[in-house]
Length: 154
Image 1 (spheres, rainbow, N blue to C red):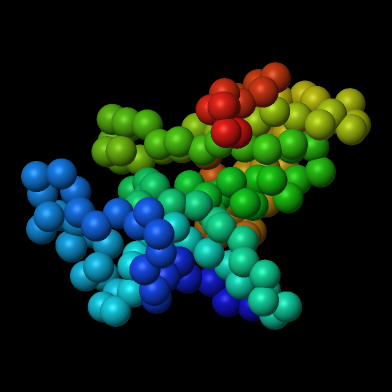
Image 2 (tube, one colour):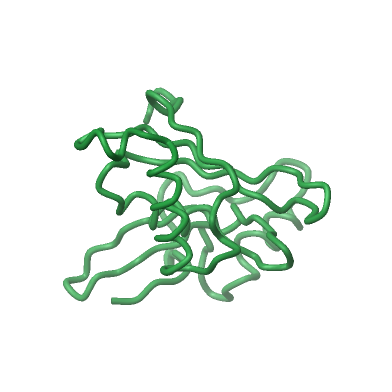
């Protein structure tokens, strides 16, 4: 049970070899962070059985009051709530904190009528995030939606 950056040790067919008109950027982005490995930009969790679970982009970071926080980290905690089907967390500008606040979009399972009220759900999610991550990580706004927008690939 370990998590970290997903890196690949060997080349594969169809692998990118440069960025058009900016080879230096390609080297700095994908080969310099972990010498000898290709850095994919994704975080990964490996179970004790050897299974891998992608946890999200490592560059998808929100700076909240001087704390760097990955959106995937918050989404993972929110998705453990019994009423939440899936989630998307984004950062947005704040007058005092700079970039600094989060907005969570949540389609619900609505297994219980109690969780279908915004006040109850918001309070429970803020408490859950405060316990699992930190108080500053709790989204200021939580928007309940019918579904999240998806690309064709999901």
